[in-house]
Image (cartoon, rainbow, N blue to C red; front, side, top):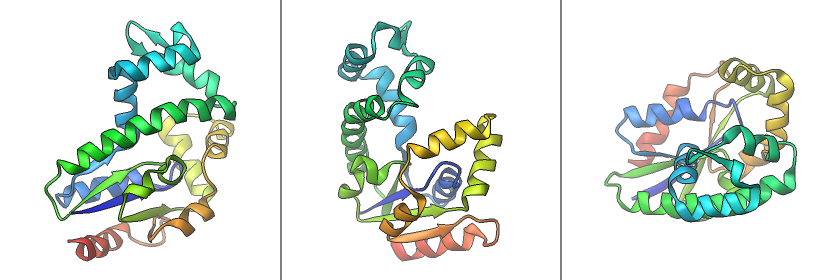
Length: 191
């Protein structure tokens, strides 16, 4: 079975592309969703987060996302520390999930595939590309946040051009090209 990564910057539309693969019967591992679950359910990870960011990191046993976000979003060092403990747990969980799949290929969807090192365990990586102005607009609408917050989040991600250069395949989600034929072409290639 092929292990395929799916990545793209914030607002690129990678989740939309992942949903199309799911409709085609392909299993998709959503790394960001799984990371949130692991930070709530994995006792070892919880203890590391509490040790690093304080007891207020959890309220009633659930991750206090507001507290964590306030500490890491404008502090690259603290974000790097958080990533250094969450990424290995998510990568390990994703590898276990991949081994259980029974399909011609499975998708590992994550914004930080290259940053986390998960690409090392994948056969190919698909990038979803969209112009920055469109990504900003989509994220502002989706998350109901101002442009400044979107730009701050973008600063914590790899440069879009560099990310796409590292990908084996690119799907253009620029509202000029249809994404369905692009996804179907890759589906035929991997099946």
